[in-house]
Length: 524
Image (cartoon, rainbow, N blue to C red):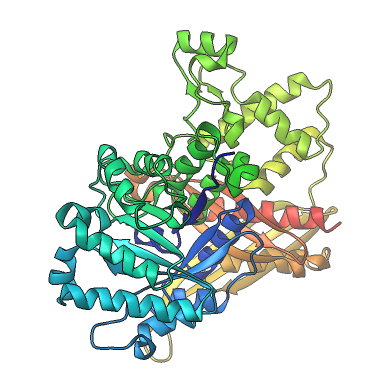
């Protein structure tokens, strides 16, 4: 049996350094729960004391079943003892039992960034790790710039690892911080490291600046590493970190190593896209394993060959990672995937082949318009119910009107003002409502609720918890096509709905209508 590999995800810290990515507290909590569900061994929650969001995250730590939350920090500062360093103690007092502490292992950085002597840096490492290991159950030493340090001064860089390990570090993590190391360099370096550090205490963390982070991670595992760090979808500053999706898929499916994630490997595609959706990012079509084009075939010869034997042009069965084969010019594209989703929803499809084909074409049309149902499961379910079952809508819209203005208040300050009115039909009865709100969508939501509450009192239990807008055609400027995703919950369920339109209010109403309908359907 091959050794077990631990996966360490740093999306919530390293990923937050991605240009254009900003985690809210709710985003961080949601991603942590997602990663826990699939069995990531370690989830780096952030750096306590570094910013308000990370502080709030550690105060509101979710209860996890499969993963350990890790607090990130650094060595004590020069001139301070470990016990009197407020930054270090903020990490150690964050409420978690594991910490990853970064220290310098490149003599150049010690001299030019820390501006301390080489011996003082070693003492800082020893003092910090000794102090931390007495306070917490597990301490990881993050050897920053290790590979650059080794190439410049191998004796010193190895000494930093030795000092950390002897001081009580449970894991020694070799970091390729600027992403410049190439795969052929690893074997000799790792062989020297293993003379000091046992394999079951050795991890790696590669950045992707030479497009080798995945390769380097896998090569390190072959040469002894038993922990691999990275981020989902390769998020991170500059060119990103090792993409943990690719690392996990290769380690489990190709290299046959044992890994806690193995039993949930078929959820990789869903989780990858869900994280992008949470961050309001468009998932890359060409991501290996999980991209929407990862198993897409367009050329005629390829399609003919794939239909006869998929192994001709697919390195794995797409379903092994929860993805699907797409034959771009074939009317069978995605049919099996749709049928499986319908079966899971208990939608009757026996003897309805023609209706299934029509529904598949509808899905294609909707996705062409900009809908993405991977992150909006409730809208997909409602569309299936509306097409395959006799479904009576809870209400029908006659009209709505939304106004938004900016006017001066009593202090002569400009303040926004929103108002919405709706007219709906319920059981042949007409209901009218108007309401003010913090913004046009809030006003529309309140007006709809006010009109419905008399007939459906359970509407009071519906809560909207997230609202995101994505521009789908940025080249069109202010007249661009937009996608609105709304996340909702009641006292039992949580779900997402979607709307697409050239008018953001209209797109919002489509998603809002689905959210209300889904809530009422599940509350019957």
